[in-house]
Image 1 (cartoon, rainbow, N blue to C red):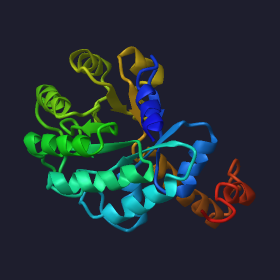
Image 2 (cartoon, rainbow, N blue to C red):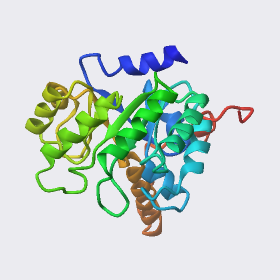
Image 3 (spheres, rainbow, N blue to C red):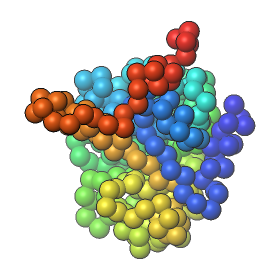
Amino acid sequence: MIERRAAFRALHHTGRPLLLPNAWDHASAAALAARGHRAVGTTSLGVAATAGLPDGAASTASETLALARRLARLPVLLTVDVEAGFSDDPAQVAGYVAELAGLGVVGINLEDGRCDGTLADPECVAEKIAAVKAAVPDLFVNARTDTWWLNVPDPLPQALRRAHAYRAAGADGIFVPGTVDVATLRLLTERLDAPVNALYQPGGPGLSELGRAGVARVSTGSLLFRAALGAAVAAADAIRAEGGSAAGLPSYAEVQDLVPADGD
């Protein structure tokens, strides 16, 4: 397990960004692994929506754990989005993450945005990070600050303050979703002594440009889940409208091959 966590950490220091695609169920994660992605994350929106629950409301702890148990059997390095830890009690967060780590998870994503649209107290977030690192020292903790995501006025200074506090508490990486401004990202990568994670946005800079700005990791977030949902609805609409067939889809047999024959 130590070797797997070290391998995941090393993927943030190759000189080019780690593309981390985010899965929402076994099939999506298995398909990504089969296409050669060495690491896969989960998307909290995809996990929540699949279960008929709201995202970011601390309502999917059991669903997230159950999904991690399934995905941990795949030949891929797995990092899990745990929203804000599903609790404000650092000890409970650390216990939950330790259970994930026991399944083989190599990293987590822990955010400071709250479901009411505000930011959590940075000291509380730092305490959660410190508790997690005390429980599982070699787990990669990606601390997400939502200053841009929640449209905080003048987000950069607050993002830096929070990032430094989270880093001091033991965070291994800093995630800043909501900005793909290359100049801003370059400033963040210069001022933070940790790998910076950006969220890929269609129409925004690609992996190479983000890499030149110093970004170490690029996540897809909920994009793949939303793309799959949109494609499913579009296919149904095309059939209803007597439109063309859906081309380029995986076959029944190919999907079956993603599942172990014994179901384990």
